[in-house]
Length: 329
Image (cartoon, rainbow, N blue to C red):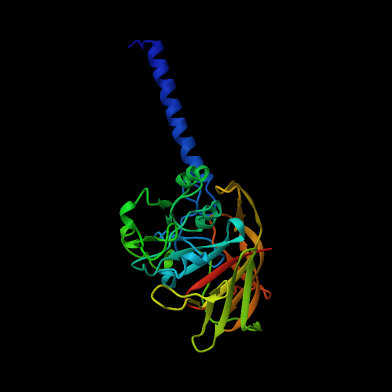
């Protein structure tokens, strides 16, 4: 039987088919070869339980992170005592703002809710697509929030989840109902922070009080032997919730970081500080009435933060709420 020579169209079809197959093979190899430390296809490590070295393993759920106002007019706050972790950061004018992270319990109401900052996007990369509740952001920052691996929930995106209180003036009266943006608390395994919990390490320095100062704000933590907690004071006044409950932490971390000027500024032209939470530096871990010197390490944005003592061993935290205050190195 005589074979016909392939036509020009047949040859082109074969060439196209080979190109498609080659592209598929290349895509598969890039997906397998370009991910590091178990990273997913968006370049982030899948989150969940924490390996001993602070890296993430299987994914488990999404925490709720809420930006909370912290000027005098915004106090007392609501729902702050239910947070698993509270981060304190410096913002414009030397003032402070809080980021409350919820995993084991969702309060009925949280607030007052305020705007997000560029630093928040780096800080939140350690969680698996966290839900971020915030009141807005500087206009040029909004596209970065939309592109970040998180679930943004501003009043524009979830208007039914927010309401204005009547006990104080705007902008210090915007509150979130967490049940309107999340089906429920994801559980402790979603706290992929790198923190370890366990018995207190040996040594340490007996510490009754520790104060961290920003140019226009300060945090003081005072040990209460009766409550076995660090009582939180802000700008010289003990912190309480709107329900009258005192705010207290089982563990306080003073994390010394680089704070530089970001690309963004407020309406008055004050540039926003950028708090660098990836890298390494000195830290102090306060628990059980003692202070322990430590070194913090977070190698990549998708990693949690580990704290290592002078003996080279991890510094375990006490069970309960953790406050992390970012102090300028």
